[in-house]
Image (cartoon, rainbow, N blue to C red; front, side, top):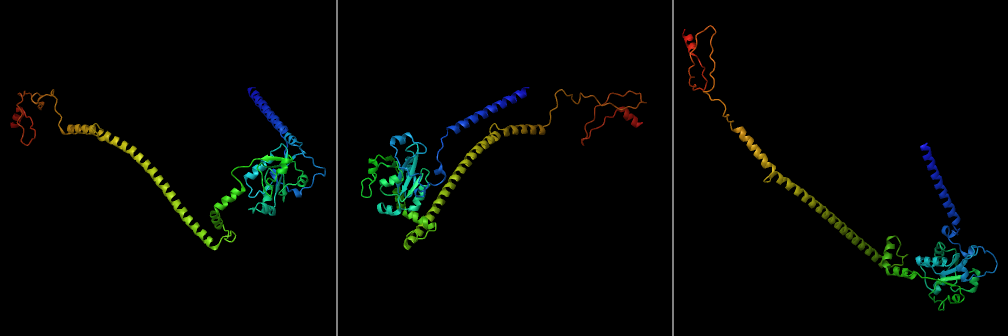
Length: 372
């Protein structure tokens, strides 16, 4: 019964947990707002390749309506233009700001052609097709206008149904005008963005020009020819020589670093060996003193050995209570059983034989018997 009740409790908890997860997922699904993910999966389309939506006259929205939010089917159409040469994070941040100006924004980006750019601004690093393609792959862009005009005309704004023009608020002087966006600002269609400090196309080109020799040598090493790099024969040989010298310097530097590492490792190991030797030497000295010191074990061993040797060499003294030779009982005499004559008291023992043999005691009766 207890096992059944515990299993039922576990099942009920599991059902409640699953129900809670299901409710949470349903709430998240209901609370999510659908959004357009075309820019996240595919490049932005070009304006001249799109089919017009309708022929109805276009009515602009006001700034208050745009900030308040428009219907999903009526996004606020914001236009931003530029050269976008050597596309970098500053360009991407400006387009991100333009995309986030209003809750519901359709961002149109105009890119000027090579002819127009070379005429009013100067030579570009990337050609127009490369710049068009770079902009179309930016995640914030919904539509790309190729061959965009240098100055925006009312006809262009009407054709592309533009509500607002986004650009940084710094006056942009070009094409004989102090500010090409002056008439846009006067019409109330200008939406300012902020420039990203520390990066621009001019800064990147300045870095390349400053380190020109480094980049030329790098590209020569990668297989580019001197003709492709517009480098003379003498400069090509000079760059090759510099590259060889730098290789030698790098090798010397690597050897120095490796030698420093080796010396450092040797020092670390020597320190470890010295520490271990000190520890072992202390232990060795302690053991030596314990064995051979004034009160060491060797002294006690020698004392004990000396005592044992003396005991083995010196004879053992007879005890004081042992009887003397005179006090000892005489040895009994041998008498035949058929003799009844009493024997006289025994005579004193004869002196010891010079040969060291001990004499035998013979009674007088024995002498008489021998004579008979």
